[in-house]
Each structure stands twice: as structure tokens, then as C-alpha cells.
Amino acid sequence: MKINLPFLSRRVAPWTAVAAGVAVAALVAGSAQAVAGHRPWTKPTVVLVHGAFADSSSWNGVITHLKRDGYPVVAAANPLRGLHADAEHLRSVLDSVRGPIVLAGHSYGGSVMSEAADGDTDVTALVYIASFAPEQGESTSALAAKFPGGQLGPALDSVPVSIPGAGTGTDLYIRQEQFRRVFAADVPRNVTDLMAVTQRPITSAALDDTATRTAWKSIRSWFMVTTQDLAIPADSMRFMAERAGSHTVEITASHAVTVSQPRAVADLIDRAARATTR
Image 1 (spheres, rainbow, N blue to C red):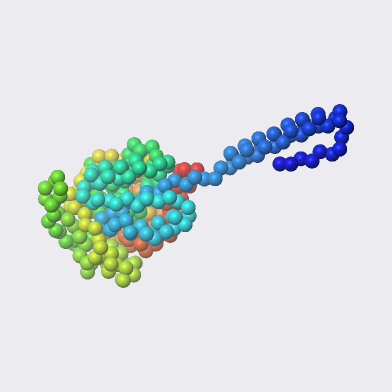
Image 2: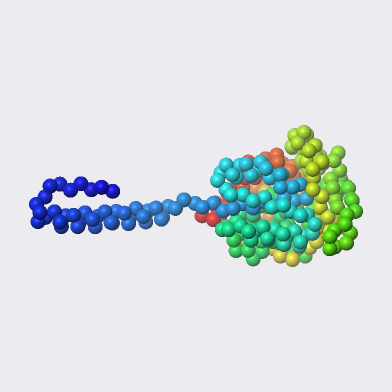
């Protein structure tokens, strides 16, 4: 900042210059304090966890909105082999991220993040999107069947599979001709035809594994309940959300809400981020 001094006598000018210097220093200090009091918000990294019968591309629309809003994003590849192994894998992803994290999970991804994030002080918020939030001793499959309305079970095909280090197991797929009806009824057919073919199977053991940790008891949570969901009954989601004390929103959507309404999903994640990391 430049300050112009008027013509003064030689006797007065030096003292005026000193006073001006003090004024400038005070002004600069005040400006620095003002800037410090209004620092730009450093946005947390959003880590996304997909569920069964999907892969990370199911978050593509959500990622587009989050990136446009300025969020760093990581979409974790969920192995879908077993709850505890999947949670261990997710923990390694979380450990690779520096700074605060908002963790969002869809479907079975919610079970995995509930297990993985417990005790992780970098995770500031959990966002359950048409998801599961099991209590210790509960399984994903039991919660899916806790209330009537789910139609996913009869639409599944079982395929024997070898699991490295665990012998044999059973992979579950949604029958392609049933995929759109039970999983993504509000998604265009040309999209669901591709989703059905590229779906990732989950082992039956992963759905039956029981939770041992519950991150939602110590980390604030948000829950999106999808009222037209045929994979997880809305009443099951309401039960879990109320038990977790989650901030809950309800939306008219199928289970594949990350595909059909990505803006709404991104908005809920943004709301959780702003509430927990400012």
C-alpha cells in the first residue's frame, strides 16, 4: 500500500513518517486477521463405496456433480467377497487419503463403510444412500428381510465360485431379465441393459457376515431413503436411519438412485460435508 505524505518541514516529516508506518502496519495486521477469519473452505475428500450388483461406475453421475462443486473424489472398488475383508480393503483406501473424509456408501457399501470407518478420526460424516447400517451382530441379509417389500431374493441366480484362501463359495447375480424391475426401474432401459450385463456379483457369505463394528455410533450420519426400492424395503432403511440418529431425506426413486438421481445424491453428500468440516 502506498501512502503519499504532503510537503512538511524537515522537523515534522520524520515523525509523521513513523506514525504513517505504524498506521500501515496496523492496517496490514488487521487485513491479515480479516483474511484469517474468512479462510476459503478446504473441501473434504469424498470417498464413494458401491454395493452389490454394481461397480464404481454406478457413481459416475454423482462424481460429475461433486467434481463440478469442487470436491476431490475417490471411488473405491469394493471387492464384494466378504464383509470383513471388504472393510479391510476400504480401510486401506481411507488410509491413503490425506485430510478430512466424507464417506458415502450405496446398498451393501453402507455395511462395509460402517465396519471400516469405526475409529477413523479423519472420517467426519457417513452418508448412507439406499443403504445398510448394521448393528453389531446383524448381517446385511437379515436387515434386507427385516420388513416386507423386498423382491430381490427371488430374482437372484447362484453360481458356485472358488474364493482364494477361503475354498468354495456362492456368487449371487441378479437375473438379467429381472435387473431393471427390481434394481433400477427408474433408469432408462438402454442403460439398465448394460448395467445388467456388467453387474458385479457378491458372495452370499458377504451378505450373511455379521457386523463387528458400528461407525455410525460415533460419526454423524445422513441417510437417503428410496421409497420405490424393491431391493431394500423403505421401512428397513427408516428403521436403520432412526436407530443411527441420521439426518434423513426420502426420495421417490428405485434402488439405483445414484444412477437415476445423481444430483440429489450429490446434494446430500454436500450437505453432510458442509455440516461437519467447516
